[in-house]
Image (cartoon, rainbow, N blue to C red; front, side, top):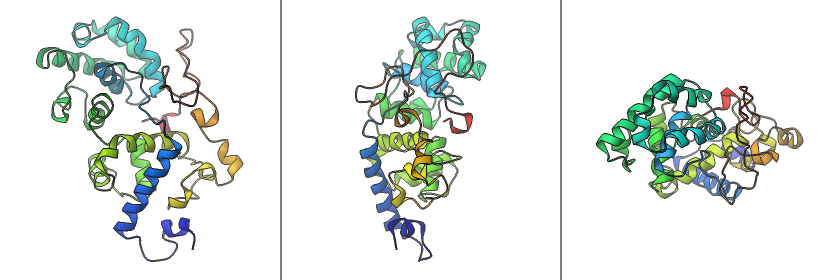
Length: 282
């Protein structure tokens, strides 16, 4: 019996928890080799920029956020200036990210709270971050993991979809998923594991048509075969740098193997090339 059949059950007895934990950790190790450059795909220079960018990333692409934030942070570089922003001007600056009225309300509220209750600094504790308007656990862990080095699991749509596809949880509740995966993956790995899983979901293991034939962990995946298994056809499904295209960052890290994304074209209001469909957004 092949490893793939064993991972899927293959008609044999169900996988034990110990075997599942070992398989999950092997997935982590093998994805670390494939995506040794995995990183947050939002451009930021400090915790405030990452916090704002993460709030803006809801229901849109990181690329669209990255094309929006340069002008936003030029106008409002810190919590004090953003807290005093004219709501209509703020809305107009963030309009490309969608749901701009609700997002503007969150940005005004969290900036005012940072100014008034945290001396203008983004706090480095989960319990403080989730008090900020528009900030839930997912956003908080993005900030903690990538701006403060505090391990955290980022349970976005890609993350939840993949860990269910891999048979690591059956839950659809983000907090339950977070708790179950926290028992499987060592804490020191939580932030990097999140990046690797999300990278894999955005580039290879898509929701509608996974590129199974181009996947490096088929031998560990019980869902192998749900997508395209022909290697050449699967290769055509790959996205971003794995397809020789730019990633989502205008300022990617130095070890990123693809080119940077292009800035926004001010003459176009349509989705920019490289944006992923709404079904793949996180």
